[in-house]
Image (cartoon, rainbow, N blue to C red):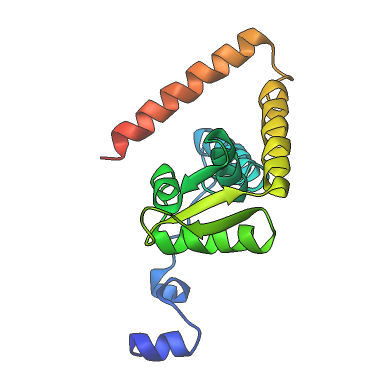
Length: 167
């Protein structure tokens, strides 16, 4: 069966019996522990992304604009985030439709777009900033200061290990 025929039939390679992983015994205690830790880290990543707007979400853009006096060039804004021009433009269109920003042509260079916060955008950026500060103050409150330092040390150690394996 060709790749196209297989795809059209709704099958992919991983569903073929020949591609299935070999049966394995019970996972080791180390594997179970590793899976549990990765699951918890995955939840934390998911929570942060969806509750704090990812790294380049609408809230981050509003806050960045507010930190720059409520106005930035669209190209300058794009450089602040790891986004393609089309992706940023799509986010800005949604913010504009929601009445949170407005875009106008720059006076000196009509090719440039200037992004400005509206009153509603200012209010939302301030609310988001306060929410983030509250979250940062309370996120690790179940842990003692010593436990927080220990967690930071362990996560830093893991990060360095993963970065060294990312080459």
